[in-house]
Length: 90
Figure 1 (cartoon, rainbow, N blue to C red):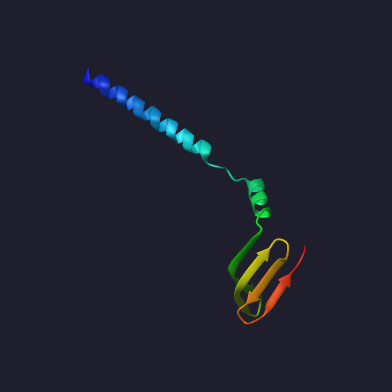
Figure 2 (cartoon, rainbow, N blue to C red):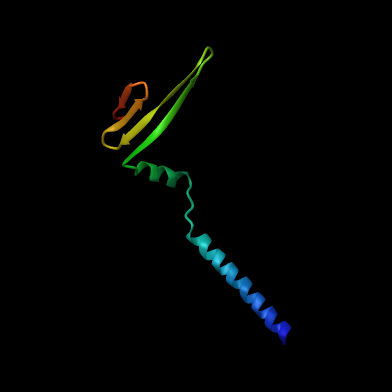
């Protein structure tokens, strides 16, 4: 009788584990490339610290700065050496 109860509880535990795993898997959102592009196109603004490294045959230049983006205005790139660049439109 005790073996039967243990066996039944083991089967119930396995079923519950499978049910919880399927529930969690169903709730997770898969991001394919189209969902990523759509979510990026909905961003209205962001700010970011940046590091740009330009490598050519003779030297390597490293620039650090701050980038700001606003959807209606455009991009602004402020470098630490007091230079500023603004990109508007396409």
